[in-house]
Image 1: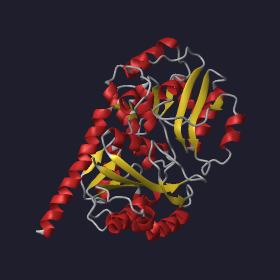
Image 2: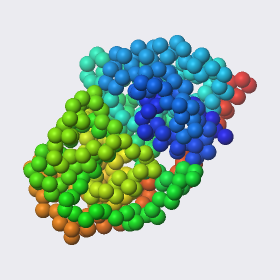
Image 3: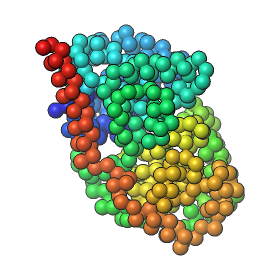
Length: 396
């Protein structure tokens, strides 16, 4: 069984749980180590007890650097007596530095995989800091065996133009996991997207789910809902980034047609939360012109899997993806006026047509199953075989 040491920047991130599920469903054993963005250590994630590297704060770059430096000194003792892993996966740049320290602690040539699912705005700056960070990334990634990323636009707009990573690239999209096929003991999920029914509208409900970090989206949706005077309601679920809008809860409570339903479990709760809405907000202005335009977010795949009609901007990677699929609603500009012009006259016939187009796409477009998990683990296993052959040649 392939033994993976997974180093992460935030063990409380739901995406970390999803990757652990995927690796274990594919037949790998996982040891998890990382920082956390919450006060207390997490006891268990899918049966894996994380090795705690300390607390960091969202948006506090200097504090995170200090935490990494501290962890670099202690990571050998933190990993303790754990068996040597076959492979190390480093999620994000900060963990790539620790991966090399961890590898030296094992005293062996363990292959490293660099998992980068967002391109942070700091590495795209043209000043001294941006150039230094890109140089650091190139140095740390000089001998990684594989780069895992989630959008073709990350490759086309960052990794290739800047020449950051010479390793082969594996595209692992942010698709939904078919819970019944992956999680032991899970109740049966719907057999296909067509099994999910939407509530009768109006009111029409737009769901914005996941990492809620975009103030512009929040204000835009609030303004639009007020203009429509209750014909459209906005349903928020997930984890709001209070570092970006500390007044999030007060803002939502003050808006008559916004509601926040708290966090949810992915994939277990997806059918129920998307079954309550008609549309999925797949727009993010958090890093406009850069990461936000390049990513293909989780909510894109999750919403379409359960028949929610996606709303996006036409000039983004998500918009281009939807255009190729010939589905969804693409806005010409980010304004309440554009939303009103595009959605304001929504009726049951038009919505049924929009939803039917989403449901008519191949479900594999939106979902991973156990065979995809096995394929990923086999791809990772192949890296250990190559590394082992190089080590054998060196000893010969």
